[in-house]
Image 1 (cartoon, helix red, strand yellow):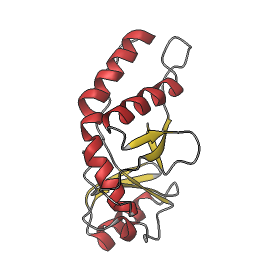
Image 2 (tube, one colour; image 1 turned 135 degrees about the vertical axis):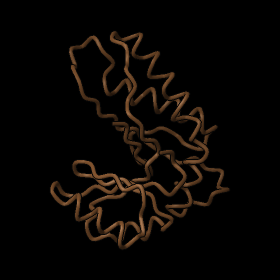
Image 3 (cartoon, helix red, strand yellow; image 1 turned 120 degrees about the vertical axis):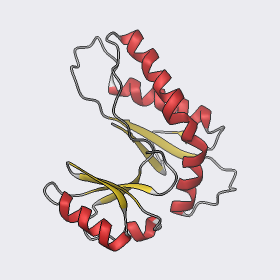
Image 4 (cartoon, helix red, strand yellow; image 1 turned 180 degrees about the vertical axis):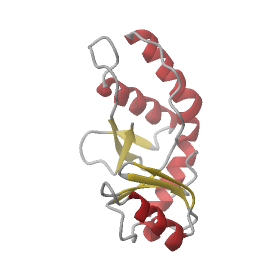
Length: 168
């Protein structure tokens, strides 16, 4: 699934996922409904304002990219190179589309020249034995790539951000 302004994730209380899935299907006519622990991903042509009205939603996110994680090599340098390749081939090509979708969803002028301040929050699983890339490194790599690909449309910052990009 790639970001086009129609794919969302709502965060819900644990145990309420199936109720939330029913709600998005009935209230929004959602398709591609995927139930995850504490979240429901789906596609709808409804606006972000409509999605935010869901009773079961604690928070709402635009879904940028979802795919099974490919096998990644061990070791810091090899993993970093493979992760940068993954960003370049699957995530960054969506930067312009996602910038436009996000600006429309939250009411920013699409033609506005000012950059959108953002931060990246990275979460990672697996062994953290110090020989692999940290979540801070992953976040920094994505932030740098996203900023560069947006040609100034997004500006990375730790404070006063308008957009939080979650990398999980």
